[in-house]
Length: 131
Image (cartoon, rainbow, N blue to C red; front, side, top):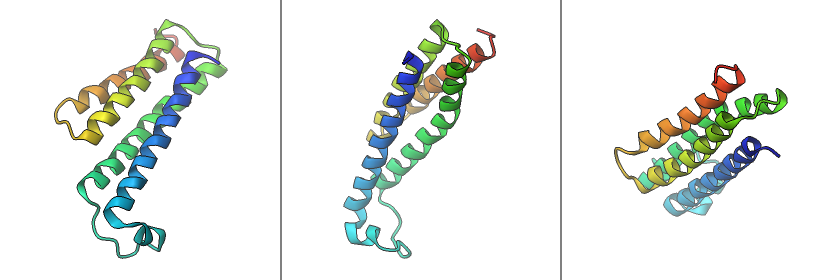
C-alpha cells in the first residue's frame, strides 16, 4: 500500500477517534438516556460537546477533498515526493488541528488547518501533473 493510501487510512481512523470523543462528550453533557432516545428536546450542547462536534465536521470536510484525490492518484499511479509529502502533511496537520481544536487553544488552529489544505493542494497539483 502506498504512503498516500496509508495516510488516508489513518485519516479515517482519526475520524473514528474524533466521533468517539464527540459521542463521549455528548453522553457526559446530556446523559446516555436522553441521547439514546429521540433527541427531540435536548438542551443546547455544552461547550466541549459543541467543540467536538465542530471538530468532527471540520475533519469530514477535509476528508471530502483529501480522500478522492488520494484515490485518483492511486488509480492513476501518481505517487511522487509531492504526493507523499502532501498526504503526510494532511494527516499530521489534521491530528494537530484536532488536538488544538479540542483543547481550545486560540489563534494557531487556522495554521494547522492551512497546513492540511496545503497538503491536499500538493496532491491536487501532482494529480494534474503541475507539480
